[in-house]
Image (cartoon, rainbow, N blue to C red; front, side, top):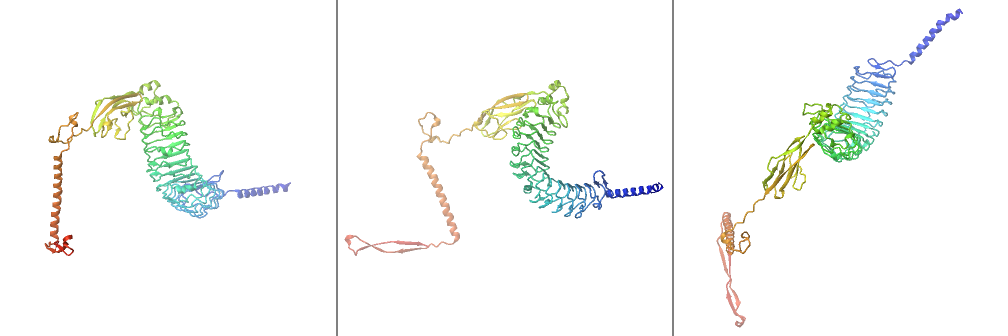
Length: 600
């Protein structure tokens, strides 16, 4: 028994030593200094560590490594070769100016790679070799000048490529070759003057395309013809983009289209008409002045329409007719004076309305908003009236709102007589001064009751007047001025008369006229006068003779200047015999004379 008690402490010490050795063999490698490592999940956060290079000793079982916001300048080949389990690597906000080929070889499990906000100017071929499982690549915020052929051929599984805020000048035709699984492309080409359509040919699986800061003035026809699966197209910050060609979006079946912060002055209806699957449309921050009625009816599935921060002054009646699913309209920050209920086909389907920051007029056209205020979500802020100190009229009870938001029918005040005369070839101006609340709109109708537009020789001008330029007799007749607003209309007719040019009588001399039997003295015509004919012929002959004489005199003096004329005449006398007659015999001839004169 004593022997057993003697050996018990020794055996306990041996067991504790063995357990310690076992625990020591299973302990993970130490975390690099200035890094923070996770215990439950093998991660290392080395951001803001003032690192000038990648730490040499990193735990090989890391799945996430954050090296952002340091001063790392270079990456050696196979820099992370031992991190075979790494799935997320963040190198953003460093000083990387160049990535060596094979720098990421060995990261066979890497899914996300972020190299944003560095100083990269070019991505050499082979820079992403070995990243066969890569899904996300972010190279935004660098100084990349272009994308070379086959830059991403080692990353065939790439799904998202972000290349925003770069200085891209060119994109090679084969730059995206091999990226058949790419779903989203974020491209910033601030120095590109056209859409790199040829490079998009390899992106048949693309569903989202986001283009920023291009210098193109027009979106050309068939720009995205090869992107049949594209659903989202985002175009932003094209300061020179003024129009979309009619066939620029042909081949696309988009569900979301955003064209923001460009220079569109009108809605490109022709480019949109075939987008029958479009659900979301955003044209914000464009200088669009008005939206025409009945031009968006082809967008049958449209649910959201945004046009924020523009110069929108008018939304015409029936603008959204055909859009039965429209549930969100955001027109905040524009110049709208009103938004009337008839612009919608189904006002009851509207759920969210952004109408704040508009100089709305407080009149009866806004009563429908008061009736719908309990079922409408006004988003950032309720609509306010600018005419009464920007007050929120929706806070008032229904009875008071009906008294505050009132309208007055239009009245056309006489400004000129009901009969206006104008000389043929001159311009006539017909005035129509109308007043009411809200300010009425004025239209003109011609004598055939057809509406007159602001183009043509007879046109309606912006101040409500009608201009008839170069008036002709056929322009005469009653013209009708029609003033209309939400409370009614008023009309006034103005008769236009045109004085035709008087016909001038032909010049006649009394001595030439003879009495002719006629029913009217004005129908008498001068008879044929031989004396007049002789006088006219004499005058013409004298004129002709004078012209010929002048020509001969001029030729004479000209010849005198060319040399002296020899006044020499040679006269040759040639005698010739002629037969006298039949009874004179064959030998009898009569002499005749012939003179030949030659002037030298």
